[in-house]
Image 1 (cartoon, rainbow over the protein chains, first blue to last red):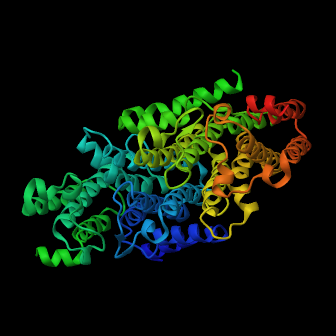
Image 2 (image 1 turned 180 degrees about the vertical axis):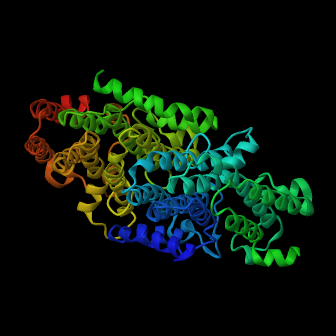
Image 3 (image 1 turned 90 degrees about the vertical axis):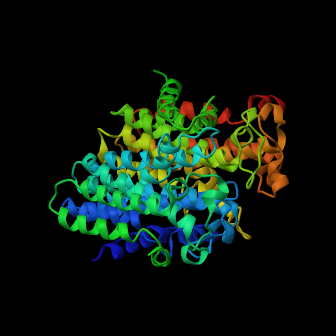
Length: 287
Length: 287
């Protein structure tokens, strides 16, 4: 089964039980997770697990799904009226726009909880891997240095911009590579640098998209960084500078892949994915 | 060490690392957890673990702290402007009132994540207990039948009132008894009925408080059920009827305690706690 099919099946199975609860909550959770976005983080997680010669695919599937659920939850809460107040994402209404703020808060909460439920189910036969997986994934999502902390730096008068970006974007990419290794029973720490470089690359690509794309190619509002006074690589280095930085980060990511059986395949995948970080319409426009 | 000291120490240790992140987020999380409320659920969890002759106090401490963190997170999100828009709780400003809605959303999110981090840390030496503990605690907090689902029934046009109350209040009480047993390595399911009866008793006591107390004795607004059109036992059965129902539920809880080494002590504790469910000022007024 290919990686994307594994991810979509695990996510669909994870969401199914919610249908037995309040219908609008179930619909809001589903709206947040399907149809799929790029699924960058879970694909990275499964690619690393495969490179580490995974012996328990159910654990890796669960880790990948948990990371994607947490990513989707963070988007739902980011779009709330008290943050970005966003009306569109992935080319259609956000959860808060389609279901209202109360259900957006609750859908985000329920997706966070669901991530840990899925992790516990997937690792039921390898429980000795759970403490490490829980440590990796919670560090990337809570305080002091996960997604919630990243967003919270926006509430500070003098935010630490490096920590802001590492927490808001980099942490979950690092968790994807660390968790992929841990799910396969391999030492996790050697995989941190790959995730961190890809997280930085994603941040730069996101900055380029926000500065250069149209809402039609991006499926969400553009120019948000300038409007909200957030740091942006294009504003700081210009378009050419940002594109060069993106290339350098992709090469650094490839160089950071630890020795492993699947290293060659992972190197090829990393380069290919790095090129795809920019939206297709934007790639053409920039080229 | 007495039960309350164990709980407060574990919670303090859990919150400490947040101080290394964005300061307002750390302060908001702390505001949500300290100073303590009644700590009903973690006390129940540790009492059951003791009754089951716990062999790994670190696991029980972690389960109890995780449940309390999730309870606190749910209160922070319940108080948001898009739900109750509450200004006071436990006699002082709510998190959203003191820190604003963005930090209240993020503090709730970070507390949910922290609960699972604490659970993973506490069970690191007994990882085989983690899948069950994760299943119990996530079922009580997410969809389809946990706290988030309970709150989401309020967003439905035709809510299922029984499921609403079981999910919003009963589920976490049941999780407290189930997790106490599971943390001690005992079969969990026989402990469900005790938690469910105590959850119902708590709901009735909460209804009585909302209908009869003053904001001063309760430390939060009263009359919310009537104002928000929520079901209330006093409205349904009158004050005498609600008090009789509370007594009957306390007796049913005692009768539901499974045979175990610590059964006698737990029976005494259950009766004592049931009497304390009503706020002190209200008990005097009702008497």
